[in-house]
Amino acid sequence: MVDESPVAPWLRTIADEHAQKRHASDSRCLGSVGLIDSTARLRGVRSVTRGEAVSLQRPVETRPDRLEGSHKHVELDVKVSVHGRFVSGGDTITVDAHGTGNTHLDSVAHMGIDEQWHDGIPAASSYTADDALLRWAQYGVATRAVVADIPSLRGVPWVTVDQPVTGEEIEAAIATTGLTFEPGDALLLYMGRDRFEEAGNTYPTGAIQGSRPGIGESGAQWIADHGVSVLCWDFHDARAGEDGSLEVHMLIWAIGLCLVDNSLLGPAVRTMAEAGVAGGLLSVPPLGIYRSTGCLVNPIVLY
Image 1 (cartoon, rainbow, N blue to C red):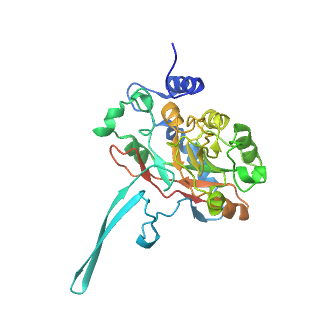
Image 2 (image 1 turned 45 degrees about the vertical axis):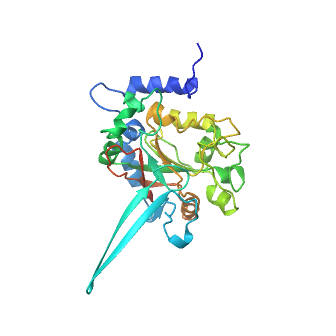
Image 3 (image 1 turned 120 degrees about the vertical axis):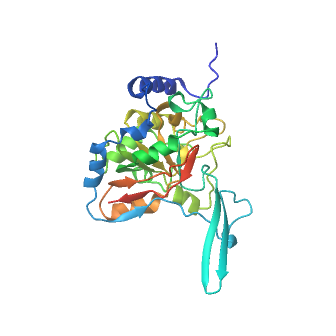
């Protein structure tokens, strides 16, 4: 019988292993965020030596004169009311919590298999009462972050389509920092997207069957094997034509991986490098929203 599932066999294997170790009948699994314990948080606290902070968020563009006609990521309706000398402002915002534009956090209710999210939660629960994002918000997403600068390792401005990031490269890039990645740490995986876009390129969504640079299968396996609690990345899963099955994104289903898509890593990584550091305390608190499949976030690294 042919398995028509959209996941590779190794993903099903690690999903089964994860379920045996981490899933319980009386509570919902927190996924990779559950790897963040007091030891991981204290590692992050101890890594703060200069008292500086840097944001990993791509600015959310809502200025009318800067928006392109096809811009659909955010719609902002601002109202300013004047009552004599008193003035008040309010707004209503409509957000696309996914895609390749804004910096956002993916809930475990974002990628699933067989009509189920991670931990066997029915996908239909997102229409009624899913609390995946609320659980992460209440638990607290803050831990030590470790930088892996792939362009510096390769000596190139950005990762190219023909060379997806491998697990060996992630390991080698971390080794150059002198740090040791530990389970529960967050990975700041820089692949050069800022320079890629500054050169006039556009990064396509994963829903399009086309070529784009990013992480390959062995890179996804490294992430699963090393207990990454949060992955902040700028490029996404690599694609080469019709090849590429979103292996990293499918780790959301397999192990409940917490992804922060479209992180603005280039300026942050360079700022930290100038300060002589490659790690810090990452804080990326999601909004506690029932039924949400993701939310915009502003990740902050203290170093």
